[in-house]
Length: 257
Ligand code: CAA
Picture (cartoon, rainbow, N blue to C red):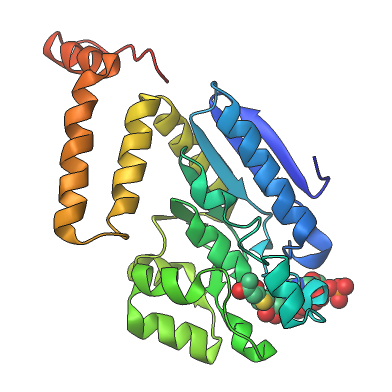
């Protein structure tokens, strides 16, 4: 495991901290591979029901590492499958991932936060896609996920002017699920993650998959997918327990979480 990526287990929650403070957590291969390895570990760990990805108080991540990629040529970027090779592990995990963002989430940092299932932002968070200032463009989903999250107008504004958006604007625009005072960010995110991890894991995974489907299909296709998955939930022992507990006015004891 890379020393630039620290993992901790908090009950049923797996915490991944990006720890490269001297470079504002800029994302080089070592960091991104480390995040992927941490996700592999938590995915395989039956005790873990939710994952939190965070940075430090100054930066979630200030982008892909500029020094690392500045001399890439086309052939190198293409042959090594830059970005696709390792960044997208976050997107493929079946367990929910919450990004806890304080300080800068810029370029690849903003894109990595958007690969997570939701973003909790400290009141200090700043989001942006400033790649245009470097003579390049977002390459880890910024031009695709940002418009889906905040709409075309604001996505164009951020990507074309390189300006940053604060936490309040990001929440209003729909990029951020919650704003939390910076000093409580991690505790509050871990609490929400523990709530999720306390539910039935198969149901959590069904919901995650179904919500993500909303972005990849027409409404009718998405509704059909949801209905099929909803019907299959009647096969779960946790569904029997959850509904029986409600009727019997007691707390459910889920067995698959
Ligand atoms: N890559 C490499 N190093 C970075 C970095 C990055 N993305 N962002 C910050 N750093 C380094 C700085 O070089 C500096 O290192 P030194 O102390 O060794 O000089 C250190 O982190 C601290 O940074 P600053 O001194 O610049 O801190 P600041 O508070 O004055 O400014 C900032 C903060 C506005 C975030 C500024 O660092 C900045 O603009 N960073 C670059 C942001 C950016 O352009 N991100 C997009 C990268 S491209 C990308 O991500 C492509 C993609 O889509 C995948």
